[in-house]
Length: 308
Image (cartoon, rainbow, N blue to C red; front, side, top):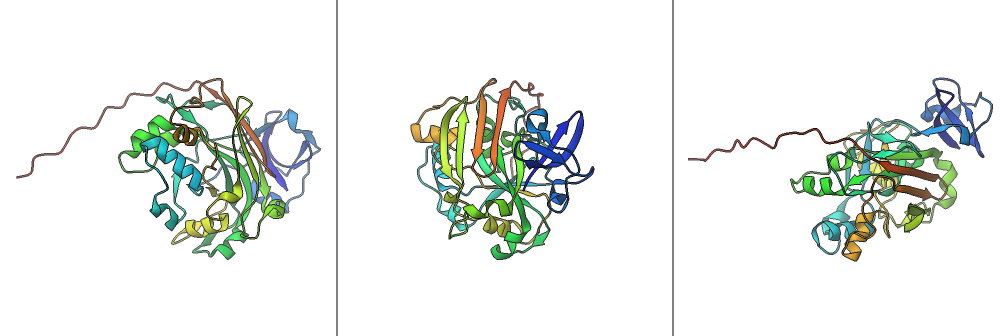
């Protein structure tokens, strides 16, 4: 089942996608309730609606599960080679902004103060029911479905912030794309390999030129293992989004910059269109537009005193 959230004739709906059309569910139905709900609306061509993010997540955890991405971006940021040994110990993640989620075809504003914008090609799992301290085996039944995830990244802001020793802040705060639909987990079971990974083809294009291709099954942890880790000592709840992390082989520009030793392709600028396609789920295509100017904030007051 493919579940869409969309605007049609000025009204917001949740509906079921059938071919090239969508049928509305009863008013008030959430995307997480759609699996057990029958459509009531007549089919409306998808060409006549505006796709919104398939859901508004309460939390967004973004993992880092592709070795090739880690290696390339590390080389781009600080010139270091290889993957840190600590990376292999657990599926690391950070929390990103649930209030900055855009739909499949929305324009994306340049982050204020940034001139080095990048995309990141990911797939996200969506939690359908609450769980705590789950095993990977238990976690599978807590995943309701999957969607395409573009973790837009202001590399200049990110690089400066992470020198403080914390995770990305404003460098990841302006936009994340989810879409085009929430595809229920059963739809993708045919792609699952013997090790539990979803063997989906991933493609990234900038202005119609392919810059990256990979397989989702090149992840180093399954989504079930990621959910289990996320639920350790806490709860995952309905609507929570867990990103796979950026794929390799051109899943973002920064990886290519690290491999090539130069910013080739160039950072994204207003007017550039990024299209990300995931087999079995669909495509999102967003155009970068000018953003707001940064509101000035003073530098820190220096408070340290000499110790006796």
